[in-house]
Length: 330
Image (cartoon, rainbow, N blue to C red; front, side, top):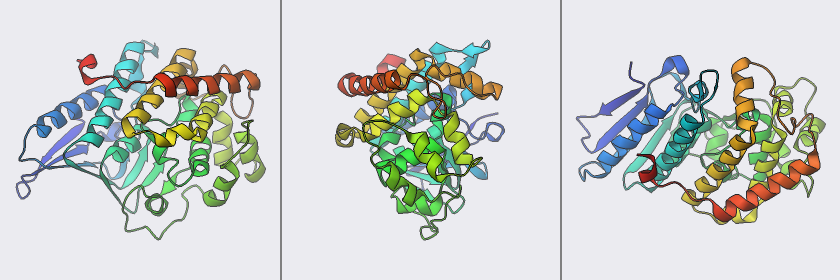
């Protein structure tokens, strides 16, 4: 069955629609879907009669759970070729959507995570339904929140971005609208989905000093057994430190969207090559705790070396990352 519904409105011939329609996989996005969307976008860009693109979901309560993690695994192990092509295609597609001459509108009314949230945030306008929930839980699988997250997670503040990344916090529709992520009829309803007092907690994370101790900060304010504390305790210490340095690097705020994507893509490549992402994927699919090289935030290993490596990676990525050209992936 098709994973995407292509929608043409006879009453609005200038508009084309894409509806994610993969209920069995919670609208998880695989490479085939990315390629289909990229091809369609290229065709519509060349048609002057088409001026608007609307992206939405055909699955009630679910926009997208993000990238299809299971698709990254072939013959029981991470497939490097698939992973590389998926990520490169995803990043180039997001950059193309952001740069499109079309008016791009995304309707989100349900869970939007990871790459699904990145797809929504690439659009020029977002309409947020009352049931919308937003999350970026990549640190638990050995990655960083990417697909532009170094920009939109830090939009309320760097502290908010760190709390969301480190705790698995799920932002409600009203919060997202208040942070400028889109327009919502629930803008005045800023209650948290996960129960955290995120505004107060974010202030504690705004500046942690030269030594990163994200879990220690959460541990001080979260009770034993709290979901956010459990999530943070399972995060890759290296991935979390990389993301902390990225958000706190002043140069990031000066980057345009394509450059931001390029930096994130380069860091994701470094984490994959280091083994953090393969270990995170294996643990996720096996429903067990990951055996990260530098440990987790709850049990960090070689913290000094972890800090030094993360700092160097961020500096290198800011200095040399280049977003792959579409031609390279044909």
